[in-house]
Length: 228
Image (cartoon, rainbow, N blue to C red; front, side, top):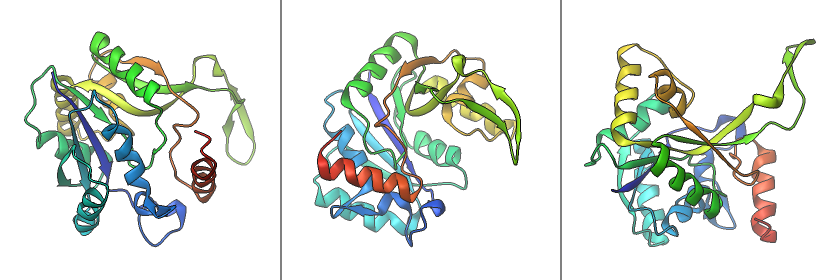
């Protein structure tokens, strides 16, 4: 059984306000996506990494792979219009069996702790489909300019990545979404919508996605002070 990571890296990261997509921004002279790839390079359980990216960034990615001697990145495929298009392109490029585990992880989520990764992999071996998430702690309000209502947070989780699925299940769920022209916000939504059970596994506050300048500043501070 192989364990293959798909890193969708086609996003433009407009909210960060940089000239290049956020995953290629450098922190301490190292690209954000390089930190992310490193997490899986260092995990003995991972066999292969596939990156889905815009063609304009293939050369940069190849330079990053060479610079850091990443051995597990076996291919780069062209990303699509939506996240799930990018993931499906990567999935379709694989030589995998139905029981192989596919991990989908955000390119701009660089601080995934190894213990969370290993816990998620172990759960996936037992339950087939897993999403990493953290329990909501803050009061949740529904509204726009004013408060409309309060949401019970006791059953609310913030989804993170990696999200892990059996290859056959993920491929089936994604193809069903394509047939129905359904666009999900992540892969767990597609798998759940296809009537498969998805196991929740505890994530980490360090496993945040770098989306805004504040996120980038926090990531930079954590790296500089070695606090993660």
